[in-house]
Image: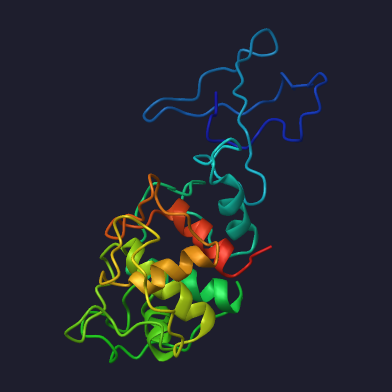
Length: 237
């Protein structure tokens, strides 16, 4: 009778019986109407809902293949999900979101970058989402943007781009991978963009590709894949 009111009973269910009060319960007032009488104690209707545990999301059940890595980055404070108790594992990671993911994984959940100036990239104003994080990954030499003085914050990060971002964030801005062989993934020839970075990511055991011997370089990175990349690259506990 008051679905959005305070819970009648809360706790951790242990398999036994649950005692539910039938008297003095609140009754919501429909808009434009007086509150109806409470039918208790003769009759009552109750809704049982589950509360999320630490690091858990409604849309990532325990049998999800990415549950472990998503739980890890949530427990480590790298993500709070996408809102409403969800993680949105199948959504693409934007380049702005990626900046936050990388720096929190590298420096820790409590890390806060210096305030944004709005002068680093033409398409990232001082008040833009993740502006400070974007400017900091530029300052750390992890990215030079998407070209033309821009960063393209709302564009989805590709798996090839992510290979570069991850290794530069982890191993330093001056790091260069070994030359590509073109023999690791069938869709990544030696001359392909970021081929050396992609092959090194595989050599380090961070990725085995997207299946069928391929890497899917141009495919956007999903939030679920991002969790796996971060956990393995930064050895998150």
